[in-house]
Length: 101
Length: 101
Image (cartoon, rainbow over all chains, first blue to last red; front, side, top):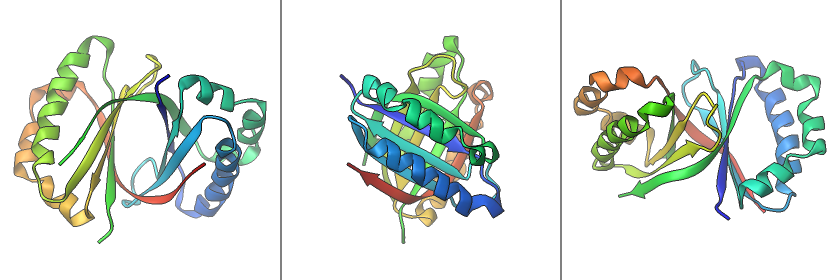
């Protein structure tokens, strides 16, 4: 089984950042407890004019773990009204290439 | 100086993947040689219907290194006609939160 990376882009307006972070933390804590969850990194844009203010990357042991982790409890959390304010664009990715110096 | 993560989302149609990868590799090799470049990871969507087929994340030693690395030579490369086919959505991010099991 190959690891997968879940990447999610969030539109968050200036005045809603705290609210977003509270909602995101709730979902993140839920998923972190699931089997196969490896790690996440929440990125915040340095340029305030960017469409996507936050980008989360989360690594899972496999696509199966990822799918199983996003269960009814997860959908209950992201079904809360607060999420209507924060359009998000999720996708599951494989690492296709990587390199460094 | 804090590290920054450059995240770039690419729209690439089914039949243009090879062409995209050749163009992307050219730019990536160029940037990799710059001072302050740390590493990159190119992600490919597992779901073919996603808007963004490729997502690159690249870490730089600092925002200053990142800005200096994107010089005239870089803009000459991404000014090539091939890039007109691949809309991209770049941004510079800080790691706001991270965690694992």
